[in-house]
Image (cartoon, rainbow, N blue to C red; front, side, top):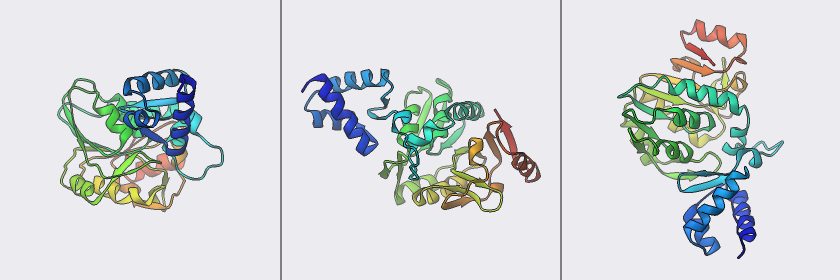
Length: 258
C-alpha cells in the first residue's frame, strides 16, 4: 500500500468513526504503529486530522457539516473556537496548587485542560478522551479516569461504575460544559447519557464553574441537568446577553467575561 493509499484509508476510517487509535489503524493498514504516526503527523500538518494521546480524529474544521443537527464534538470545536480558547484559559487560571478538580467533557473544557499548569501539583478527575489526552502530559497532575462505554460523538466515557467513581470523589472546583443555558429551563446538554454524569459532578464538587461561550445563552437542549443557580461562577465571552449579566448578578453567580 502506497503512502497516498494509506492516507486515503485513514481519512475514510476517521470519516466513519470520528476517532481511531493508532493501534487500530496499524492493524487495518497492516503497517507498523510508527508508520501510522508518521502518516498522522503529515495529515495533521495539512490540517486534516488532530492527533490525541494514542489516537486520531478528523480536524474539527474538516469534520463540520452545515445543517447537521446531530451533536458532534468535532463540529462543536470548530464553532466559536477563539472564544472557547479564551474561556478555557481564564477558567484554568482559577486552579491552584493542591486543588482537586473535575473537568467535564466538551470542546470548551478541552481548553481548560490544555491551559492547566504544566508542573504544579493537583489532582483531576475526568471522563473524556480529549481531556485526558491533555492531562497526561502534565508532570504534576494526578489524573483519575472514570471510564466506561465510549461515545464517539462527544469522546465521553460513561458507566454505572464511572458514576460511582465520581460520587466517591471530592473536588473543590469543577469545570462543566453545557449546550444550552436558559433562565427558565435551566442548564442543558444535547445527549441524555451525559445528564447523570454531570449531576454527579455537581453533587461531588464544592465550587461549580460553568464554562460556556455566549451562543449557549437562551438555548435549550433536550437533556436538563442543573438550574442556573446551581453554579457559583460562569466564565464566558463578551457576547453574553445583558439579560444574563443581570440574572447572574441577581442570583449571586460570579461572572467572568474574557
